[in-house]
Image (cartoon, rainbow, N blue to C red; front, side, top):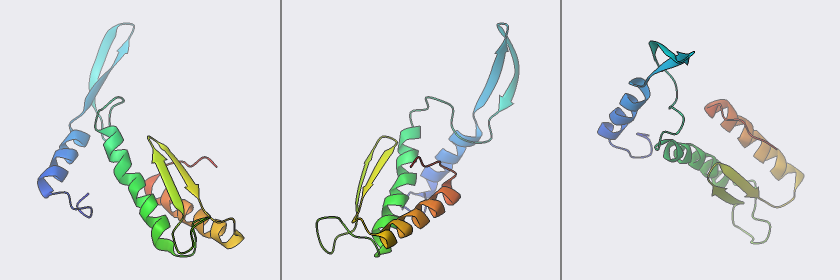
Length: 119
């Protein structure tokens, strides 16, 4: 987030949210001992969609910076990347090399983020 221009204080707040969450498992209505959550956010956390958008914004940037793929209708423009909630639609000129480049970008994105892409 620092790379995207977020101040150190904001990044510290996010770090605190990630590392201060605790949960207990109910077993037959009896809560067990508290467990410190070390990864991710709890389900339903209101900040989750915003953090997701920061991550997928990188995918859009990677596609637009490539230069080897083109918009299907407008010459000289990068592919069209439409994002809504957790869905992304990529529209590009139907060329084999462009599809290979896109697949390579998607593979790099998956490796960096751990997200799963459905083709």
